Image (cartoon, rainbow, N blue to C red; front, side, top):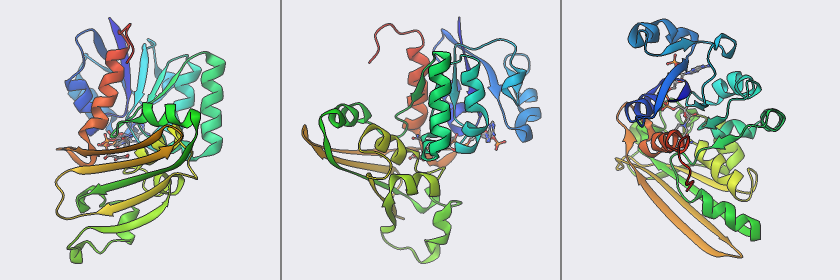
Amino acid sequence: MKTVMFIGYGSMARKVHEMLPKDIKLSTILASARSAERLKREMGESVTIITAVEELIKTPDIAIEMAGQEALKEHGLKVLQKKIPLGVVSVGAFTDEKFAVALHDAAKTQGVNIHLLAGAVAGIDGINAASLAGLDKVIYQGRKNPSGWRGSYADELIDYDSLEQSTIFFTGTAREAASLFPDNSNVAATIALAGVGLDETQVELIADPALTHNIHHIVAEGVFGKLELSITGLPLAENPRTSSLAAFSALRLCHQVNQVLQL
Ligand SMILES: NC(=O)C1=CN([C@@H]2O[C@H](COP(=O)(O)OP(=O)(O)OC[C@H]3O[C@@H](n4cnc5c(N)ncnc54)[C@H](OP(=O)(O)O)[C@@H]3O)[C@@H](O)[C@H]2O)C=CC1
Ligand SMILES: O=C([O-])CC(=O)C(=O)O
């Protein structure tokens, strides 16, 4: 039986756990210190709860970060140094160049891969293939109900009480978006890393009170032609910021651990 360690056990990780394939076991949760005791009571003997990589006794086959950019910075390097392949959803942490280089170098030295998950969007494969021939521009638009932006830097940019129609509250680069909105715009960084980079990818963030879904719209143009893709993603019931597809992309990595045929 192959084993997985989750870094973080919030809305996304709980959904992935619920849907894990039968041949993969959640062996360990690397939790925050504030949640560790509660999770120990909830999980009993079935899952080991730790708060630092150094506490690991049995090495899992893979680790998947679903805990946020700061948590990835706290634990990512140590996971790789234990030769554990690492799946990442908080891709916006790669806006920190020093961290990105350190993570990359640790993975290379240890001979393990970092899997940057597509998360809430699709088309990352096509954008990445197209970038090899040359991309002229990539634009990402993230559109959510105000509840999907609340609690973020958007609170300083949006007057939620008077918001009656779709409003663009941020225009900038993917680097700016993914670092200013660390819990809401990781996909901007993922699209950027696949395509024209963090400083060339244009981003627009929009709050729309009429929306019940998170809409991700990507336009990419280059030597290959043009890609235009829109996803109307249902947010997780427990967290309106997070699209359910993001959880399913982590679930996909769990399936891939035992798959010979890699799509
Ligand atoms: N690429 C993509 O498409 C997407 C990426 N994301 C990323 O995924 C992250 C998780 O999303 P979601 O599950 O919805 O968020 P939640 O807030 O529901 O869950 C986050 C979990 O991580 C835990 N955590 C926080 N800090 C640490 C730490 N230092 N070490 C270990 N665990 C920690 C939290 O614990 P506690 O409750 O104790 O704080 C909580 O259990 C987001 O923060 C975002 O960065 C999200 C959506 C889409
Ligand atoms: O789940 C989403 O809609 C996107 C998201 O929060 C992120 O990229 O961090």
